[in-house]
Image (cartoon, rainbow, N blue to C red; front, side, top):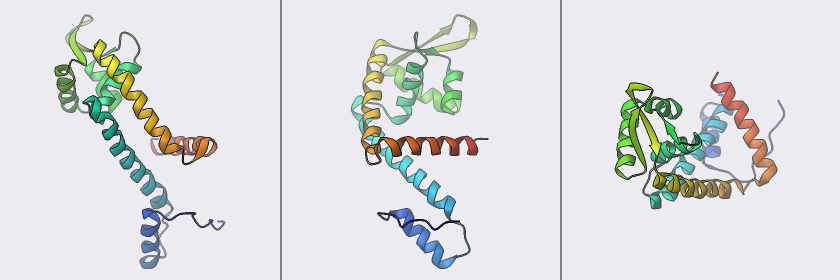
Length: 170
């Protein structure tokens, strides 16, 4: 294995890796370096998203529900089961989010005309307006973070993370 170049700037993960190297020099910490950074980036960006969605009166989880309905295309309708599967949520967790969003007038639940026992969840006009604004603000926040890498390195990182995601989800 070739020697790695010294990082231009140390981060908190570097400090953790150095500590492990002192007490367990036999330990392969390559995974810790990657996944420690992925976790910290996800946590930091999650916090930033909470901040940018707060003025819209929604949390990240509620944003995810509205965004999933928006991405479904017209008529912006899915069943609670489809939403739960897409968002990897329990039905209990989904019910709480739907209740809050329905009270806020951002979506409505109605009987499924094709299944007497089923429901449909549909974005309201206000929900559509809100999610279109919120997704633009969230995407801009992500772009600001990626600007540190530039377009070529951002594209490379995206490709590498796709490969890693596919490998870990198998």
